[in-house]
Image 1 (cartoon, rainbow, N blue to C red):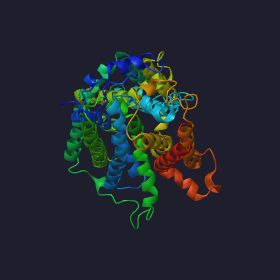
Image 2 (image 1 turned 60 degrees about the vertical axis):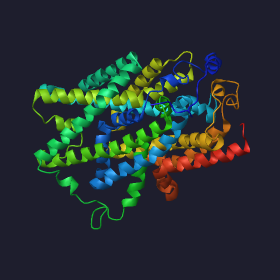
Image 3 (image 1 turned 60 degrees about the horizontal axis):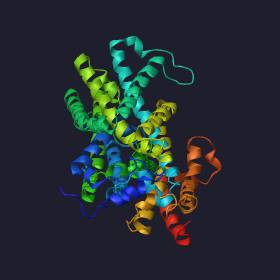
Image 4 (image 1 turned 90 degrees about the horizontal axis):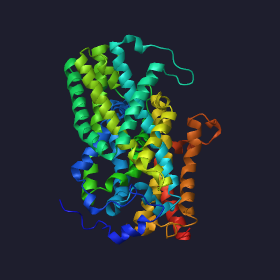
Length: 499
């Protein structure tokens, strides 16, 4: 397939001009046209690979636990991903046209030094996700090993950690594998993704077939009424749960909606990235969350108890071949998702701090260490906290960043960037000593409305004395932040074009 003629050609003189800048390194450089090899199938496979994972499988459980029935949960997940697809495609445009990664694109709106603010906010969220995925992989190893050595299942939690020594060892083992892949580099990551996409889809469909066959149907959860229906415990409360849940579903991939240029810079055409993402993201998220709901429903009949975690389901199989095969598939899938979704971007973001000193590999190691220190098992210990604290909480930060980036690229610059200036510390994007005051003020203004609700959610303040409207803004954090930042940035940029 030919390269889109609308893509920015990186002429040799452009490359020579920016290569001398301290804002440049090989990982942050514009991708040449010769390196643009990703088509529709590549982007669809990317999203299938990243979406088909254990957190997606378990995502609907939090919604059903909150009172939704199965189709309301799956529909909420699908709708949330359909919404987040819009900023995903829009932010991908600049990456495809100019071949630049996310932190370099941020320079246009935040400044050559100010770009570190959104880059680091995005990076630390990725560190949290990296830790969560590493914990899930290590937990899978622990649970399946405990079948063969039951003594491993027990143990006293370590003080301050809340997990046993065996769990720590399994977690660190899987975390170490992630570090090894980072050391191996981007080619190993691409190989993992190519293997993982069909593998986990096949495993999910096999689980679905097994559940349907063993339970003679998908069981009670698919016929269970919504807790919000008339006569049910939460009658009339559907919308008060739906909107924060929808915000949480958007938050699930709000990270990638910002750093999608890290991937779209390799696209052959704009059509490839748009169609590929539209085919891969919302459909896979809805399908895999449905598999999770259906299999979980069947476990209620088969085992007499509800098992939301696919690893718990697999531990009930007795065949060593099945167990080791499932363990390998789950670990490989979790590893591939973790590296693609939670290392590529923060590695670039940390490299952006000091391009001459921090490489992609070093940035990846920083991501792994920070993710380890965040004690990820505590982030997902409570399903309610998983959505209402973790997902919604960071969406309050990432929504405004997306609003500023889209306002700047599409409205202020009309999709035209000065490529050289993005690597020039004294060019048009240096603003005020490298910082765009306009972008930073717009970010702050957009984050503040959700702050009281967040502080009340984490019990840092007593929210009973605050107006319900102010607390309620937190439930719409991504929408509120995106909209306010978009409008504030445009207004401020009109008043102070170069500030």
